[in-house]
Length: 170
Image: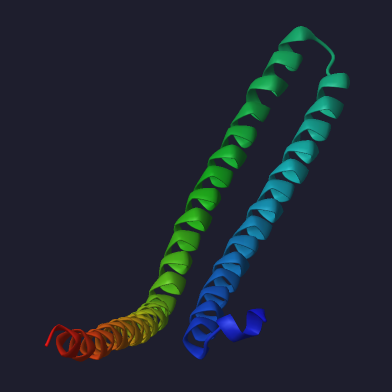
């Protein structure tokens, strides 16, 4: 029963929308995977840096060496975070470009199928309006015919009464 309501134009439009959503989803999941990998790389690098620094700090002999180790290890961590930020910015910029390209590639088809659905709806509405108009005309014609029969019946019954009444009066 539902399949009767799904016309070829609606099916085509739904297919275009599903294809668009699928491609956008795929691009977003690819981006999420890249961000996840980038986050893992950052975490692994930071853990390595922290482990190395902790070993060096534990093997330091005095407070001066301890402070020196801390200050020298801050720079690599800051560089790692700066590189992460740059990679993340590039990744997001590329994702934006890819999503835009994907949208641009699907918009013409989505517009075409939406227009076909709208045209089909207008045609169907016009057909239904015409059918409703024809039904109304048929009802009005039946009412007019019934009224004519009623008037004709009344006229015939009056004609039948008038001659008899006129003959009795003479």
